[in-house]
Image 1 (cartoon, helix red, strand yellow):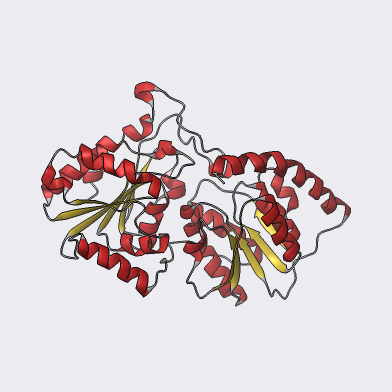
Image 2 (image 1 turned 180 degrees about the horizontal axis):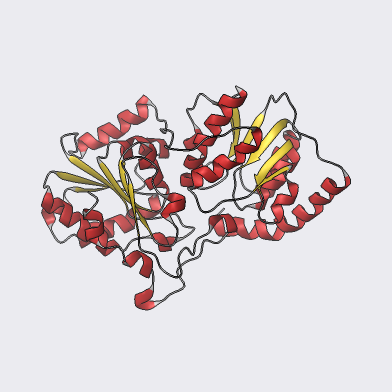
Amino acid sequence: MGIKLIKFIDKVLGTPLCIILSLFNIIKKQAPLKEKTKKILIIQLWGIGETILTIPAIKELSKRYRLNIDILCTKRNIDVYSGYSFLGKLHVIKLSPFYILLFMLKKFRSYDIVIDMEEYLKISSIISFFVGKYMIGYAHSIRSLLYSKKVKYNDKQHTSMAFFDLIRPLGIDGTVKKLERLNYSSMEKKIVDLELNRSGINRRDLIIGIAAGAAESSRSRIWPKERFAELIQELYNKNPKTKFILVGADYEKELNDSIIRLVNNVKIAKSIFNFAGKFTLRQSFYLISTCNIFIGNDSGPMHIAAAMDVKTIGLFGPNLPLRFAPLNSKSASIYKRMLCSPCINVHKGKVPECIYKGNDFQKCMKEIKIKDILNLM
């Protein structure tokens, strides 16, 4: 089910359901927070990048309660949560009414605390209401009527800190300085290494990873493909031993191929490898970790690189690096402020495409020049 359809169903069904269920909170006072907590559930259903940003807060929560924390996620983001010793059961749910109802009936009030880390979807608050005894979520929108404790969403800070704010009502303080390294198996590493060897890429090369695409929720975050092609040529001319790994989802194969075609040099083109759709998400964690430098739009692969402690350069326009910058000490962001930016406000459900047409389309991204990136290399 696509994100647009999910949002439509969430809006049509979610709003009246939140209103109806909130009446029960008025009639019957919600249960207070228990002193002895035995089971905690975190809900995060969608984006890869945002899922990565939830992990520092979840780890601190596990330390505080000395519990393995359960997760409710989807097939889309489960791999981000796999492999951590501080996590318990990973519940994978399909975002359809039947499977959601089934989960709520099966887990009815079975969790002492549910923390809803979804920023906008109403369905997550409804799930929280049914499976939790004490629910924590953000204070904005009608969904907040279902929570026991409401937390103001602060969009003037990094999103990892906005997630951390959700655990502060439980007496946990702190800050997020870096992301947790993502997990992969020795077999997944072996599969990637075999492909790298087959492609003639080794650790003696300067390996530069590039994520030229972005998730389907907002394609306006994409830096022009012509610029990526020019950048690759500039970087190769500076160091002919450079190998370029182009990553992305399966639907981004053509985008990456078009960048390779735009590189007006056969020798350079042979140093570019289109790995979009080639590997699983966990295999991609390892693939990206092999890069010396990673350059990407504001999207999931950029956060993967930051989590794997790779020097990362993030390209921003529709959203703010203040909120979504690659979070490690080696990394930097490029952002040229426009009057219309930020047009993306995830916590408000606003993820539009660029309103401008013609030459002004994506003007915020077009303002980023090749020299801006070269100055950070």
